[in-house]
Image 1 (tube, rainbow, N blue to C red):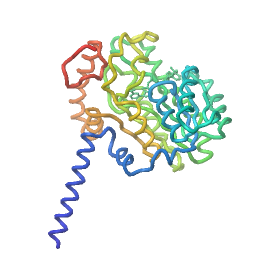
Image 2: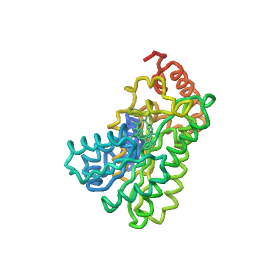
Image 3: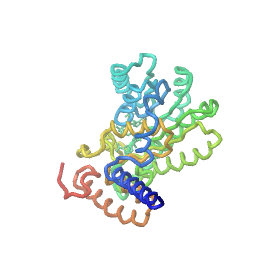
Image 4: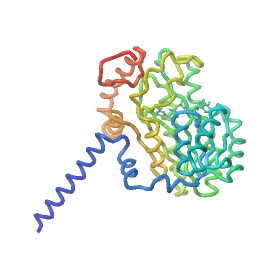
Length: 336
Ligand SMILES: NC(=O)c1ccc[n+]([C@@H]2O[C@H](COP(=O)([O-])OP(=O)(O)OC[C@H]3O[C@@H](n4cnc5c(N)ncnc54)[C@H](OP(=O)(O)O)[C@@H]3O)[C@@H](O)[C@H]2O)c1
């Protein structure tokens, strides 16, 4: 009998490890998020009817968030600078969901214009009565070597990605603490956890966000129904490279390179919604080899530095060859 029990236990442990190994090799998110996607609450049930404010809703991840949330039946506030693009996203949401005109508010805003944020938050709350979820998604990346980069670019990155996000968060937080409920979901990046070449300022701004929201989460521990969540995607298809800061403020990137090798936006956003529906505090979303990188960085930092050197060198080589910085880590250089 004892022997059967031990053998059953061995099989169980073996199966458990095998499932995790396969999930790791073929998965595209951390284990918590992957388990939530299989066994957790569905976004369709949990997010239906909630009021969600999305910044950076005019393209890329924010645009896709609007589409998928509209299909879940969430009511939306769409923000970014380009009002015409926000109106296009709004029309697509209405055409492909059961939402009505009054369920989607287009609220143009510039994250850099912090003095306007109080008035914008008031307008959002006035329209819907409250905000259930703020998704801090708007932001810009960077493609330039530190040695060539003007300090103004570093200031621009911190003003936009860090201070702009903090400013909007501070406008929404008092209302959430008053109600004792709500979620603030912030799109950070793998560069918020690890150092990445060509992105010194971008990575610094995302590290700042990680520090801010990890601290805020603890500060709000007396509000168990307020979720502070950070999302750390690896490379995802969007306009982020075309819009990246370069060596000088207002100097566009010469070539963004091909983006097809990156994770589809729809998959990244689906995983984000799963995380939001299940109260996941930090989400790692990336295909291999990036997923391996998160785990090594978290659990084996000395090995991570070794890997970072190899991947980082390749990233700079790709950039100098006019390719997307993240293309072909394990292949020979081929111009796009
Ligand atoms: N794609 C990736 O590989 C990746 C990976 C990790 C993290 N992320 C993060 O994901 C988020 C979304 O980026 P994305 O990939 O979807 O890039 P994207 O397609 O370039 O979208 C960026 C969004 O931010 C908005 N934005 C830029 N500057 C703004 C400003 N001053 N005020 C208000 N909104 C502004 C843009 O709208 P307007 O131009 O209309 O203002 C746009 O809607 C960013 O925070 C980015 O750091 C992306």
